Image (cartoon, rainbow, N blue to C red; front, side, top):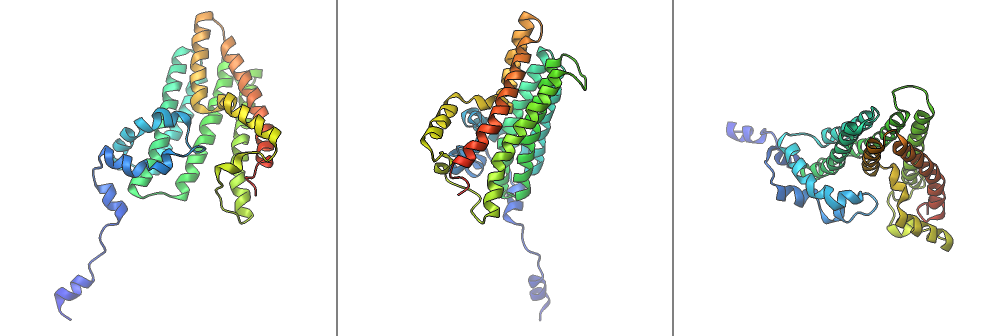
Length: 279
């Protein structure tokens, strides 16, 4: 066999699609086309309402920067986790300035949370590990923010105190609500059912519970414990406390979070069991 022919046969394979995309310089149009398909924009339960309102409008610019820096999607996920956890740590120190910084960090948390998926879809680097890490990030960010609110309401950093206990309890309850949701997927997988279900399965089978669910969907009180809404409420409470003096608004907000989180643990469990999500 001739030399050139042998060399040709031993030539290493060319770069993969993901490698070619990573080495390219994407435009905003490319990132929006590949990173924000209509199926993603149409999601109801997996997309934060503020993400739909403005997060997805801003995230392509962040995704463009991350793509140019050659960041991996998991690195972007780590960045949004750092922003979320840092927000909880910062607001624990009290004061109006920390509330402003915390709110800004949570806004970055929201935008980066959109960007990691967009980057994964553009670079064709979607992974189960990335999905898992994303979920852990939401657990950490929301729980640390609630715990930080407890220290903020206490008025000083300490390992004891009623408000500290209330903040930690609210954080644990909020994580339990998330665990109830995630356990639906686990239960369906163990039963041999598809992991996903249609939106119709969310509706309770009984008329009375369906009315309660519709009322809850209108009031949206459960959002008080979610990171984005909570960071803005903390900022509002901080402004009120700065004007009036004391920590009354912050403490009222903390107790409201504790009550809502406790009610949600029970209400969410009943809603899941009464729906067709487990069938």
